[in-house]
Image 1 (cartoon, rainbow, N blue to C red):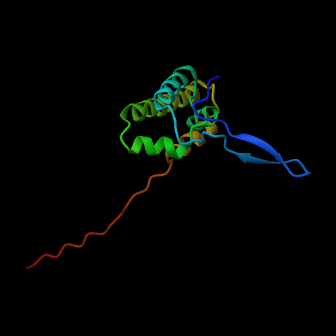
Image 2: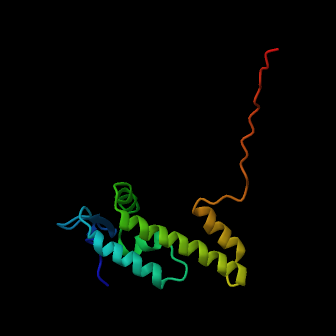
Length: 132
């Protein structure tokens, strides 16, 4: 499997075998965003219920850099991200309605994406003054 970033090397330090992570000569500052977009698109197509954080972990892509890239105007990455979220929501709904997925887990997953199962109603009293 080709990684999209340089993997940190581990060096043994001390008598007790404590590992200290050190970066190799190249660090995590340069990413191949074209390859990341392709991998994300492939992951979305192949995975039944795609999990964005799983993609980050498996491909060594930091979440903050990913969303910063979208905020800075990477429209292709933003579209692929939207497709992933849409597919996940649809698959959770289909799986729950068909009985293949546990409804509690589907609700939990949807809440992780920002969904709420309570209504927030903003009730404000408006006082009208009528001059007679």
